[in-house]
Length: 468
Ligand SMILES: Nc1nc2c(ncn2[C@@H]2O[C@H](COP(=O)(O)OP(=O)(O)OP(=O)(O)O)[C@@H](O)[C@H]2O)c(=O)[nH]1
Ligand SMILES: [Mg+2]
Image (cartoon, rainbow, N blue to C red; front, top):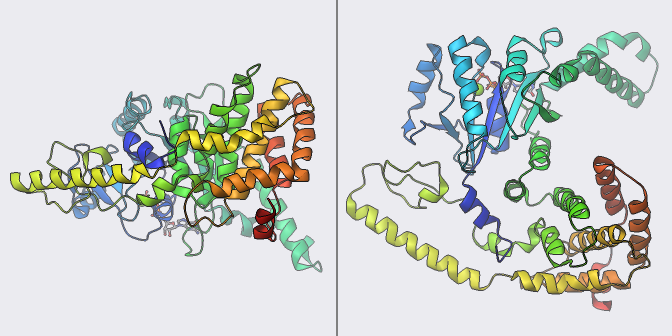
């Protein structure tokens, strides 16, 4: 790939496909609505891409029929496609087997766009004594989820607060509001741990392994959001392209960009051992930072209205859609016109790409950070130092004005960094971290902590940039 282009990735991967599982009333649809920032109901398509009337879906649900292969899309964010288990605990054995087959097929699908990219397993906290029911046990024991990350979502988490309050009410008399809240929170944690649900989720005999969990509360309220779930899902994806793709839906989350870049740093710490070419390494770090993806910004990240082409195409596959108004009953002429217009759109896209920032330019601008002399000659320490410097500089540059959408702010940030005391702190820090003997997880935490503590100060930025 010549340039950092999330749009191009999306073209290749298609949509981000999530399977959401959970009992009836667990809060699944509410989560999907939050993720897609809408209160609308989704549109539903069958596996062949034919739109299904919502009334038909509801009627068949009432009769107990449900098809997990159906795809749900919210008009607001057609980039996501969801499969909903629709409360499978009430289903028959046959339905469970169908789900098992679906999970196994779609988690192992060869084509990335057909694969399920993440599974959100919802467990509502409403009834603590029945948190881990037979349906959960069966899913985790029998469903082979392969390498697809399973994120467990504890929904309606706020339900624990009144329980906690009821249990410690007497101890709360006469203490400050702040202290009260702290103790209730503590009790909530105890209640959660005492359910033993986390142990049940990672029984050694389980075939499905959860990668991470999040707690969501008050999702039915308008002022809440699902960013923790999206962030957690992004970080648990082990496919870099997918991670980049999902990250591009959360462009304003700079801290998440840093966390993703730290994963690259740690990966490369192992891979680059003993080597001294940092070009690819710095470029791979730069990939995570949204402000470098100018091309994506020019070509709107929110896909345009996508309408199905002839029936043999799935309306859910972005590459087989054209951003045009075409009805299901198209004439040959309409189809030809649609293709012609798509051609024009692609030509415009090619024109935009002329203005793309080239990979070589990004590397050229960042290279002084890798060329900087170091006290340490140890390879690992150098790799960490270059990674830290690159991330710190890119984070800083995201705050610099950039009307021309070029690499000038990064150039200025590099110059400013090299003159700043932070460069020395990074050098020492890298050496210390490299000697720490940390495992992968600890190393990640240390590096993230270091970066967050040593971000370049943003006060009076323009002056500093002028000085540089
Ligand atoms: N208190 C509380 N209520 C919630 C929360 N999330 C969802 N709800 C409510 O729970 C009810 C069920 O939510 P849905 O999102 O429809 O649940 P679902 O899992 O899609 O249900 P089915 O489609 O029937 O399987 C609705 O009344 C929601 O408003 C939450 O975090 N806290
Ligand atoms: Mg629902």
